[in-house]
Length: 247
Image 1: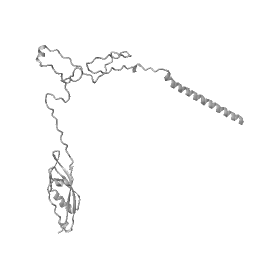
Image 2: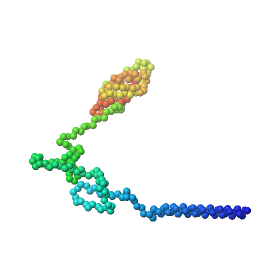
Image 3: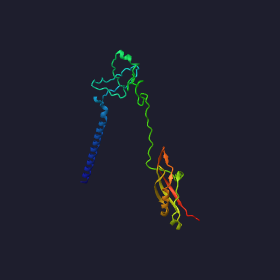
Image 4: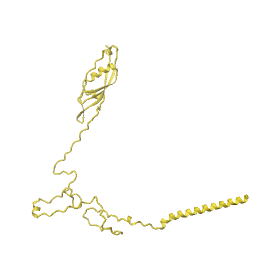
């Protein structure tokens, strides 16, 4: 019983090995046929892809004409439209014949009209060019207007101190003298175009000293600041010092 079982198992393994080898050979033969088939059969493109190339544009010069190239393909049918050329010269409009009396009345030869060119497709002596002077009239070129500064210009405290033309000294508060209060008040000011202080903001300082400092600075006058020939508003900082009298 044991020997028979071992022999049957060996026969089964041999059958499976043979089946695997046969399947591998079949797949390899099929893959080789798929790879070799395009190389054996010549590829032929359909007639849709046989396009006759357009001859290159030779310009509008008056030189000798070159012979037209010969094509191996048959000429295209008359139903095909000619290719669109964006750089070809426009055909000149036919001119009507005038009688000799009318031709003699005109002085000299007529210049080409606006937009007409020479015989070679280039602009002739009388052709109109963009930006050309027509009729001897000078072109009216407007000067660019200066940019408007909506926000005030920033100037340092030293620069604006030099432009100060009228200054009022702040009054020392009596309460500050009695309590021996001294200090510095820092202000942010916006000076209008006429030199007056339009807006004033206290940045730091004792409230007892800030009020008289603000009242005094609002009366100051500055020389107007100009930019590009026009007055502009200025933003600056102002420092007011309160020092007790030592006497």
